[in-house]
Length: 272
Length: 266
Image 1 (cartoon, chains in turn orange, brown):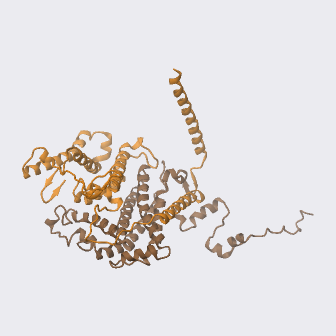
Image 2 (cartoon, rainbow over the protein chains, first blue to last red):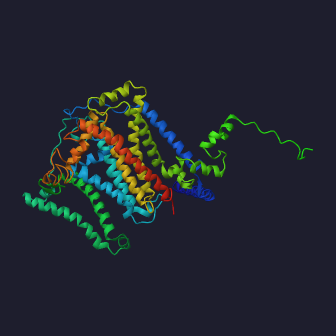
Image 3 (cartoon, rainbow over the protein chains, first blue to last red):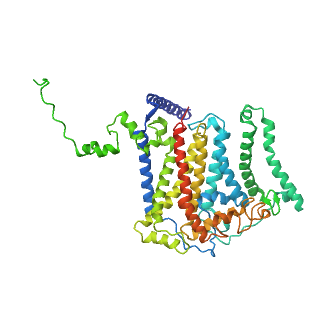
């Protein structure tokens, strides 16, 4: 009994200490004026941060040389050829999508999507302070997009992709002759469509079905107060961007689980 | 007798050289306010200084905390200034010509006094700028600072983000080594898949796009990354994008003030 009670007891004490410390801090904050002089308080903070950064940059630059390889040779393609690190999330998307989407449409949608955020996020809460509880959807989508879909893909592209853009674990030998089974098939073929025309129609139906979720969700939930506030146009923009963003995830999962190459194939025009 | 009005005034305290400098007509012609720590001087120190007057003379209390802003936006700007200064030094030695570019960079690295430091700082500051602009965007999103009345400044910021990536990307080509041309080849190859405007993009061929005349050849000034690409990227990197980015930065910083300063709980 004593053993089980002890940790609970000390836990309560720690909780009490936390509460009193929090109260003291809050009281101290209350006594400060709402605004402070920029000089010296803000300028000093900026000056210190700037000095630390410049010092760090100089030490880094003295000790680590900027990369410099052999002279450019258009006849000798290195394997792998990697874009600059900040674009490797997009290059990683080339595994799953054709260049028109991974290299052009996806980045354009990211830029446009970022720009429309202030105009479609009509939640007045969380303006000027950190909060998760008051804006779960916005923060959740942003964190997923930024950390999972952007940053982690960059880490994979920088560290885990070797010759032939094949996947290698850290420390694994980058074997340029690594054999990878090319077993990917198109989703309409998996579903039984065998002629070019039927595959094309099935593919188009699949994509149309996925995006028809947008009006479907609207019809089902349009009487909710959130949706009424949002309005049809803002809902359309948000849901199109959101479903496209999640569509990327859907295709990646289909690749990992069912080895799906394309969901929709329109020969000589467009593949998704 | 001591209190008699006829007694001579007490001898003045001897001024130190620093005091004399700070009260000299020349000094006062440059800095019109005193340096004594008074509320008035604290305000003037900011509002009477062309660089510091980007700031309001008083700041909301939470705005001066590192854990609120991470200083990410200011440090992005500082790194931009570092790349401008070091970049101008590099321009004295670098020629954007296929035959010379690589060897000019080698010359900078091995012969020019402090040339290696200028190039290394330029390169790493550019990478740091990309990193810090992402951190800044992350912070601004997480604090909801794009919400009214700051919507438009967020849009300006997204444009600055794109320009920063383009600055970094165009600079990537200039050393003209294997890393440079192949990274830029991978990057610009995407443009030939542009829908409608690329010769390998959806509906591109149907609209008459060819390898010699499409979105990619517009970027690279040819069918591959070659000498004309180097010159084109050099001009974009050193003149075109920095000017546009600088104009947007002025707008961005000005809008912070006009939109009510640092965001905070309403």
